[in-house]
Image 1 (tube, one colour):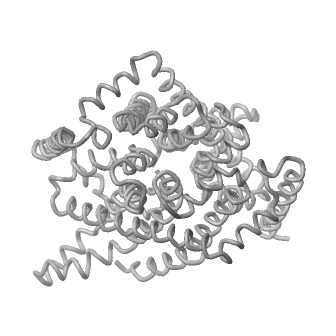
Image 2 (cartoon, rainbow over the protein chains, first blue to last red):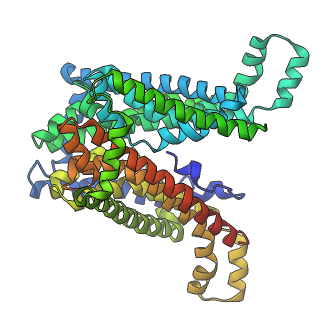
Image 3 (cartoon, chains in turn green, purple):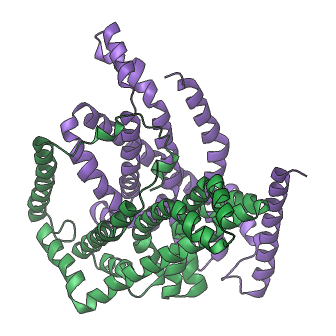
Length: 269
Length: 253
């Protein structure tokens, strides 16, 4: 998330091998600890009632039904669709604001010192509550919450990308063609791509994190709705399962869509 | 007029315009949808005038402080263990951190409610669990950038590991520790609000929940506005100058 943005990150040479691919011992310990944790969970769950700690097997089974049972797949699909739509809208709005700040320099103060600061410090729960008051229970309300939370992250990343576009390269491009369209598609966009992918990665991750919060009040479908329903009847199995469903969906999207995109448009160093 | 001046002027004009728009809009729609600036300001002042809301504010502050302390100590401790026992790094950064990072804060809150009930422990647990991966990632960054040559030189001067740790490792890590605290502070308020709403018996989140049930939108606005102002002011007037100070002091390293 934003932690790496704010942290001082002048890495020195050789820092890349701080986390080695892992010798056999490291792998054994890492995967052994995961197995041990699962085992400990299973043992503890036998001693505790289900509403406190359900067994991992039950949670696993429930997790599976979230992806197989048509009645529940509706909720899983709704959450996924909302995250994807929200990320797309946030990228467009964030990119538009970043572009405005650069194209019309007078507005930079408005975008950076007002809009960004405001959206950045506004708590997500606040949006979730206000959205219900304003837009009732609807998909629009959920998407509104997610977009409001995601915009600052997109704005920061795409602004960074725009600031790094090489003016000299554009200058050179201008000496070859006058078509703004060609300049945009051949020079500006390829230079911007790594930042677009970074913005996509960050907002996708945060989008899933806040998917549950955004669906708590303003939705009658989705994983967040399922979760709050489960909470009211102390169904810890379902609470666990929805949390893990988010982990699974997030990981799938990152591995299948975002990582390949990032490899394709690697950030030039 | 210089560009910087124009930008500042435009930003102030924007603030003013937004306030006017808010005022006008609040006159058109019913107050439960959009309370005007005046009632919201009155509620914000009442936070400091009345004993009850002030107590909730302080309680939230306590939750946030406790959670930051817990996650900071745990994060620094775990990151140091990973640093000195490289064989554990895959477990900590390859398994634990991604897991904590993708487990949602609301999930921790709801589970904590089932485990600990509605109380301070639940809130502090949920906020700490959300903050921990941030601390881990930041401290890893710091430990990664430790200067090997500097440590080697120190080794040639003395054999005491403790002294080396005190004189080289800790000062080099100071900026990253500070960055950790700063990130934690910003994130913790937002999470604390959620955690208190579902898992607390007090705090600003609790107050917001009561206001939500009474559809007292002005109170919701006031609580949120207070958090926005408080986080922003602390960042601007306390943390940024402190961070610059820390960076200046340890730049030599």
